[in-house]
Image (cartoon, rainbow, N blue to C red; front, side, top):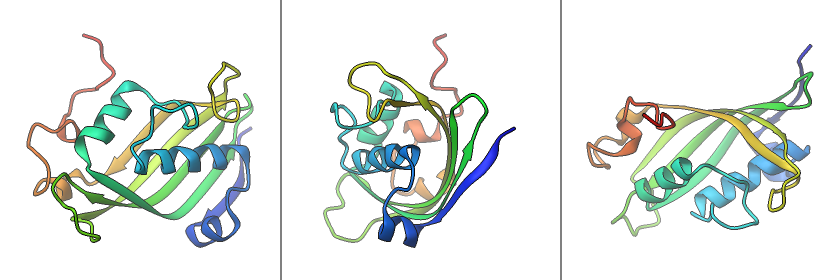
Length: 156
């Protein structure tokens, strides 16, 4: 049976750092995502679509973590449920103030992967993002991938 193994607030995460391998993996992804550095061996593997949407949509990102819950599954994988505020500087905003800040929830399943180049022997198995994309409309083109209702992973 799955069990809740950790609940960490953003303040605790900033003060204490990651408390588990899955939290460390997730933190490295968030740092690489904000730095638009998802293609290096030091960042967790992400899909081409995740890299595309991040690097093309946003000029700059930063994240404030509110809370991260970790659930250990019977199969050895971990589910992380995070609450974040994502600060976005779209292309053209060179100021130190983001154009928009959006509440975001990321639910992901992280499991083992011992292939060369993985971070900590882990990988994302599944990822879901929930955020109010309506808040992005004044800042991004109407055809931006973030507004698409199509499953970006469909190969049809």
